[in-house]
Image (cartoon, rainbow, N blue to C red; front, side, top):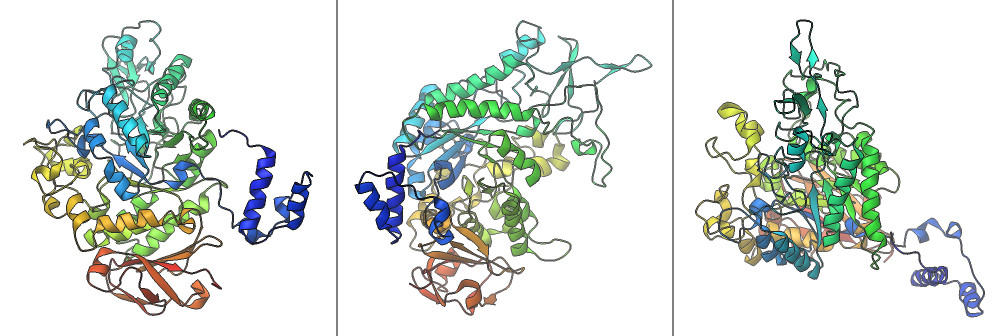
Length: 621
């Protein structure tokens, strides 16, 4: 929490804002000069005047969040796996991009059965990635470059290799109930079966028998990922201490993994009701209504406790902008997501754009690209609780890359959407250069989840394609490693899709477009201004971003498959001309539009994938 400001200082600041708006109130200044306390209620000010004042925004509302998958970002010791020193060596990349926050996927000790999401020690670094000293160096260097650092918090489960679980299996005090243990259910024929019909997210029963303890334990994901028991107050405090450990080192926030699954119903023996929808498959959790194993209301108290821990660090800081950030991961409806705002998260992740990109070709048999994207955006804003902040995501370590879902032609266009919306954008590493998914044979598959489904179905489930090494240059293995055996192969297009080439090219490139957008989004209209869709059809997506007394911006993109000529009448944008601030690379390189050129807002001709951000001078100026 920021320290309370002196009331007299607030009055002075308020009057200064009035002066800035050219509406100085002489009476206020006369009163202050005479030492008379003056109060000017905001309710007396016009709505237009109030909207000229920038809101008090936290750092996490103003930044781009960039997700780093540590295994794939940069290898510093040539073992074929990325590491913390490698990340440190690449921090200048974010200054070039104008990205202010990095988020690290898990780097904790782990047997890697789920590549780090099976944690065996929450307060250390896996040797594959380095050690705590390497982490501290990375964090210090990042802060020295004005970068914030957010880390993954795998809160719901540990590895079965974690000492807590080993001691719990042995019934060693005080660890007996650190996990969810239950006796089997005895059938009439005296056969003992699982306590209930609960199913794992990865399919089949979520109950695993322990010969050692002679009981079943619950796992929401893999059998080697036992779920923690948050109904045990000692576990609750243990996990708060994990947060404290990393906050004490200077971490700026946490991303909570798989939040809906950290708790289950108290009644382990109650079966879940059948789900009779046509898509329900008996080997998948959706075969049942998951109200007993997902998003149970008790999660709220746990999140509130984490919020209190984070706020205690904010209270202890002198810096007004040192709020500690918490974002939680869930794939769900706005109604469910919004509960986590109430619980104390700064944001629940919103994956609506991921779904929209997956569906952009057809909805009910009709091409709908721009309409799908608009509807996904509206679904967020229309359901956002008052005073809360939105966020948007295009892809991540569990979802295919945007270029592979939309096509290379539309990479700049989707980045343009992501970085011009009102809310905090999250970029997955490599999206700024247009990286694509790789092909991985079954023999070379690394992802245990993919391997589980065998040669016939592994491609449906494997997450390896979107986790390939970052493409830095056109040297061996794209500059990721000098090892002859990187943990995953580099995409063959690395010779021309890489940071060095795109940065130094005389042409407009995806990287340059991304950087232009990242710099431009610091404009008040794009940072906190209103968003209004101007004209949308299956091909064209367009919207205005506007803040009082600042330049307004019109975003226009052709997500269709054919050239389109579009007219923006005065009634929509109230302007006749726009100045090009950002243009997608193909449109720039083929000479259709040039940065800083003036464009009439009538008869704008856009090829598929073309996008523009046009600056509109404020009306009357």
